[in-house]
Image (cartoon, rainbow, N blue to C red; front, side, top):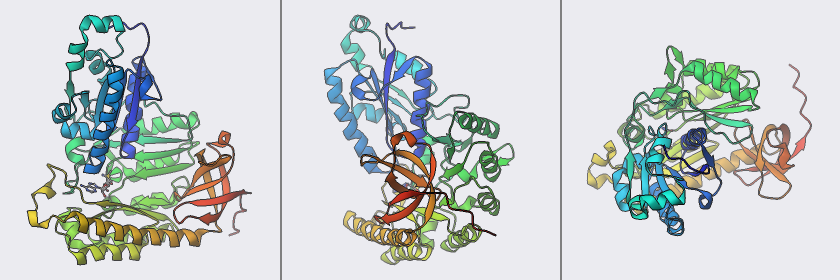
Length: 463
Ligand code: SAM
């Protein structure tokens, strides 16, 4: 083993979804455990790990731009190792090493456990004397790829390095067994793997003891979770009942697993927040069928009614893809109709992005929708969804909501927090109060976020 006179330093930069944020915490934990210091700037690091997303081409282009920028740093410090991890690393593999030759390492989502050994092979953090012995040219030229997908790897037993604060991401599931025709996830993260329910609950207990009060359970289709007879509603209930946990969220669920039992647990457990992300993807049955989403618009609307009946006032958010190959103008209008019917509190909107290797790429070439048309649909969808969001939020001005203070706001002397319904609120407060719960009267809205003032906790309404 290489002896280093000082601790090695790693910097992890994250792109993409909550699962990636959580994976970055996992990598940081693994590296810290093996003797690395985690630093806050790439300039201070021996190795920079860029943890990536492959969901859309745009996300990958951003990463390519970023690693080329990091190469500037490597020119000043030739010993710096640039590594690309995560979904894009898995998707592009050795092609990425060829296209960006200054990247020395690509590691897919199942290769994090052995990161310290892998980095040792590249002599990360070896002292300068040793690096000269090895010879800079050899060191610079060496490249490694760790891309095996492992059906048994769920990182059980490893500690994430969590930033201090009241909230924690809890990965309960990795990979995905669905085959939505647009989606790259099953090919870069492999099939669905769930963690033991006992482990998850023990982890939440430990976090609660250390002061965490809000947890978000994570998985690609988190509500299809199943471990030795414990399904998602049961796990959610057990987590919600952990002493000290005041808020539980989960993302991303699949509409098909929004069962009666899940809705019952959500409604019954006081810690489960009144917010549900329900990725619809489209408001047209033919498009949903060709996306292989395995539900219809009618089914989605039934789920929305079920959830709203059980939890009146629950906030709903969604994901929508426009210009899926073959989507006609009328079918796109059906999606706008769905938005107007359901009135989601928030929508994450995407233009279809072709992902090599996914089933949708085999659709007839003439079905693919041109950039201008796709862009026009996206703009119209955003207009409609923002207008609805703004109407909903303006109607909520005057409410008093419980807010968990999460961070300092942009303006001095202000803090930012979130309501149980996942609405962002800014108000006067000191940063030292991060982690506290308070009550805030919502006084103004930009349409998307709120500004308010702290008030005394409202008295319970007499029954
Ligand atoms: N398994 C997660 C889910 O179903 O929610 C995937 C989360 S993905 C990070 C978030 C969203 O990206 C998906 O719900 C979908 O709307 C969008 N997306 C996935 N593949 C896409 C593609 N090829 N083009 C455009 N948007 C895509």
